[in-house]
Image (cartoon, rainbow, N blue to C red):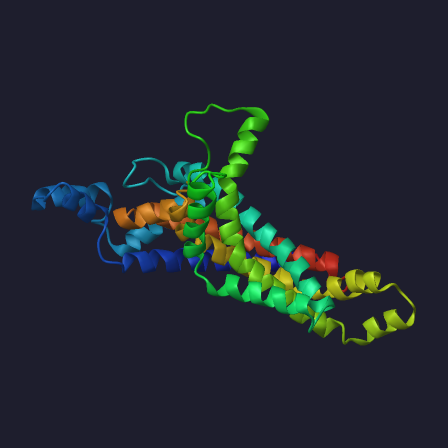
Length: 319
């Protein structure tokens, strides 16, 4: 299964690369137009020079073939805005994005699973109804509004947490002090991002556990006299986690796509803010690089999810 998924990833990545390139080609405007607008105007000669400098005077087929050739050499090109290698720009932001998205997704999966288990064990009781109301609120309220309200409460009113950024500028912290400072800056955006997915994972875990609890092997486990906690954890929850872990791979891509909003609200220096800046500047090489790296990350996460499925269910074989 693992080998088949890796082989399927090759044409998938190629199709994503070509589709992204074509979609950006059809978007009106380019970096030369933005530079001319920012300078207050440009002559026909200067525009032609800019077009040649950025390679925009070539045909679309020539630009696509050149891009694919450089991509095979692990060259993502140069940023038309910053005049720096795209790989360098992404490398400066990728760690921050992975830290925020990974921690938020892990928190959502753990808390959502615990709350879903609580709802399933106490189905129909006040615990189930209370958590369902909280999950509905987290699912319904816009993420950016939660982020703004969290800043107002915990940063402005209470002064417990910093309002934005990934670290205290000019503090020159090292060791555990730097880790603590980083964690304080991460806390608000991580909790804000995780809220929506906690609601999803909790409801999904509840539904999956109620479905699994009706299976024959669960009734057999109860008939054998096993402790209710053991049946819940080792029989019901373990089998109910398969659809939950499947959604982890799906929502990781959604997290990357929605990172722009959270990173803008909290001024978090990740790839989402880089994408926004590149869109405004029509810096298409950076956009293509971010989309390409994001595609690889989503594929890698889905491969890890397949391995996790094999660990949860021995009937799934990994080759």
